[in-house]
Image (cartoon, rainbow, N blue to C red; front, side):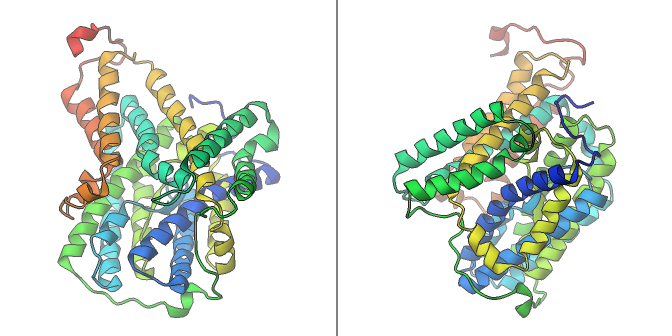
Length: 443
């Protein structure tokens, strides 16, 4: 039984109007992320405007296809998918090499992940995800996204009107919480969509020359006009992407397990095996198309907590919308006009719900929450935040082979909470024995 109040549970099908509304809301959350990450990767490749739009179209195609398959035959959970930011490290480490070598390595990385997933290895790791581990992961997701959210709220590296943008963001987030408190029915269910619309209009009035999330030039093209793939193996790039996919697998596993724990599901081993296998196969398709592979987005539990809807079927309209956008370059340009400040503000709202979900898992597990539990959660959160805010010039000094792990706050946080829970504090507290140790004895 889920610990959360839900209007629609996992396998419940909402009425058509609600189904479309929730699907539109998931789509409104996922589209800016696809466009932003697509622009970043295309920028690393120094693509011109035409190639940028084509790159983003292919990202929409892979994201939509992978999501559709996951919802019906994969993990079958309300988890949104999109391009994996952790693979940016592999692309950045491969600058100066040919795209064929980069995406051949990405294809192999996806194939290895699919093979390991199909073997059931990740499904057998389910027992590692105790309530304290899951709670830590849920909160880590929110905290390690704060550098990204900060960049979105303030805009470019040298932001214009930083105080005004920060004030705008705080006001928009508070307005969303106030609206969440008073709205009912369909209006409350689609609050995120209306916040994006109202926030964009308000931003255009206050910052008429503000920076958009996209910044792409309209071009009448379709990505399939120049599809080609040449298989090229570069050992250095391959090693970098294999490490990236290790980090991606931890992210994927944590996302799937956190939603399963949040909804109180018992059949997680099969869901994890199928989910990670499909993520790997989607990585193979991505490599063939010349784009970075997808991952199950870790922000999904926050969306479920904020909307009260856990129906996996609400993501089917989202998947179809992503697939449709893959063939609509003009629409991509328009959607790229959503101000980054609005996107960042919506993410703050969603991540607050995610933190609340993590705290509910931590304190509602029935195992007691004492000093040791606080330490098990505390160290991963501290390390995750510190790693997430490491300056770029410091990360650049890390060897490319370890950067996807040591430079990723979320991955370090997950690894550290597993060490704290299953090695350092292993079996210190029984399942029904609350911790009552004195604070001084634990410091």
